[in-house]
Amino acid sequence: MGRYVARRLLQMIPVFTGSTLLIFLMVNVMGDPVAGLCGERQCDPATAGRLKREFGLDKPVWQQYLTYMGNVFTGDFGTAFNGQEVTELMSTAFPVTIRLTIVAILFEIVIGVTLGVVTGLRRGRPVDTSVLMATLVVISVPTFVTGLLLQLLLGVEWGWIKPSVSTDATFDELIVPGLVLASVSLAYVTRLTRTSIAENRRSDYVRTAVAKGLPRRRVITRHLLRNSLIPVVTFIGTDIGALMGGAIVTERIFNIHGVGYQLYQGILRQNTQTVVGFVTVLVLVFLVANLLVDLLYAVLDPRIRYA
Image (cartoon, rainbow, N blue to C red; front, side):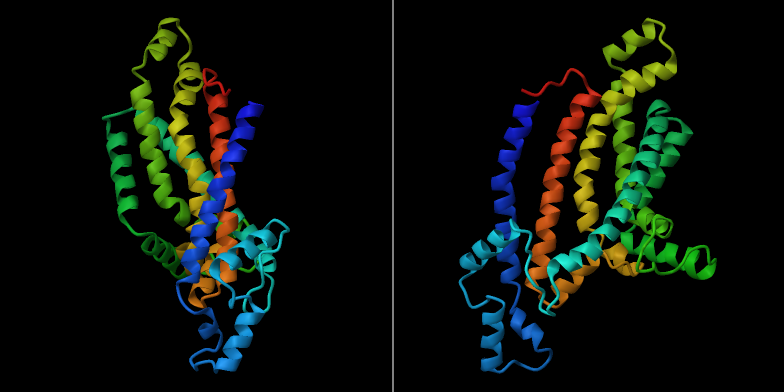
């Protein structure tokens, strides 16, 4: 296990380097950030030159990248164009988005897996058909439509929730935004769990367990569910980073100042340091989540061994 983890950590280095380099190049060609600093009026050459020297934009792109990566390993993600440290923006944005992601993941696990198990065990019955139709509707409706409808009904018309979230964004305030963020992924988890349960239900090891006279609950939880959750765990593990980075729409609807909000503001204002810094952390989240998912396979299926 230790050798496998060490090998995976070494493999993360080129992946992390390549991903950050690609993001850095893409962000630096999306426009002139100095022009965004001057607003609608065009910067005079002297001011533009001074700003480029101040933020290191007068150097070649490859040199800017090497300087940035050298600073990242010391915990310095640069300074935004408004003079605020990117780490300060991260310290306020990431805790909010992490709480939002936790709520969304809980919805996926509790509701998605439960519905998937129920429909997988009752494949072809009315409950199965109803859940499949409901998940198809959820997948078909865009997230911003779902979010605006729930905000209008629950927040404006019925007054059950606040239409917008406070700056602290506590867990109880994030229940509805978390449901909106997790809606599409929750539908996929339900369908994926259902398919996996239905397929493994006909496996030899399940029939053997039933033939031995084991209780139905033990057959489902110890034999059927554990093996069926492997593809579900893979999806949820990769979805963690996707939820954190893809929460722009949800955070905009409910006025949540999280990672999505900061990325949107950074792209809108062509603030390269903010965008690259936040995406760099999201790349690390993806890599760590994938490693934890691989290690969790051995917990779900004891036959899996890592050399």
